[in-house]
Length: 334
Image (cartoon, helix red, strand yellow):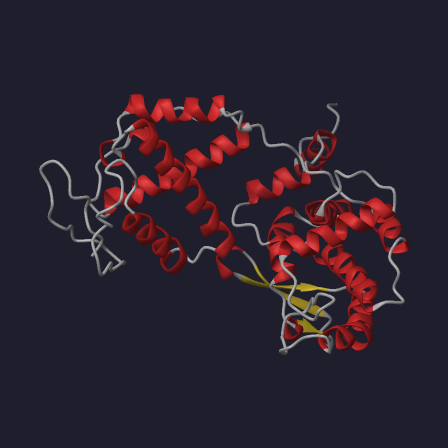
């Protein structure tokens, strides 16, 4: 059971659902900080019940702990947070000059947190639900094109195992539209050479298979056959991860991102090109080639097709043309 905060009139535990805490909140904790047992119970729920990725759970932790520090500084009891206090926290985020999207994410994290607290009967506050958040304008990501990819590959020295690895990473991401975290999580066995496809695990560990074209497969085979074995020799222990560092250790998403940034800089391309630009370029190239939106959604691993629409930013001309072709009365009037 998740223990309630022992304060004012209440000291008995509640009937928590899904998480067991073996001890009450630390007696030395501030009466205004979010109890650590609450935070750990919430993160346990996100990880094991909602099956969110470690990166997402880490972001939730950061947002809730930052809120806890604010509560402690302002002497606000998070268990009985009211609307005025919720608005004050949002104002604090604005004063700290957080970007709109960051403020919106932090507010969303706290709404999820308080929703969990209410279900666990740890708090009845719904103040975060009522507060007006930042109005976000979803910016369209920069899309990489074939020329960008060719320039990056030309700037990589593929005579080295590291170069073979970097080339394989870029070819793979542009060929299958994988998220950088998905690429970092790949194992050697996720590359199916005979079936010419890669197995990706997206958000919530949802599995999908994406086909690989010739160039991507050739780059991966060159890395697997000539590059990775040399990198693996440098490791103190063996690893099944696909992409290895110079020391033979599994590469993190941040490390892979930095390698692409180096290739972008060496090619003299715009620094706005990121791993996500390869994913976006993959989506737009599919649509330009005539793929339907639902197929692109499946290949990208999007839960909602509305997210795919943001990525692909279909032009109004394309939409009008599609509507014209589909409507039997779209011809000229007699």
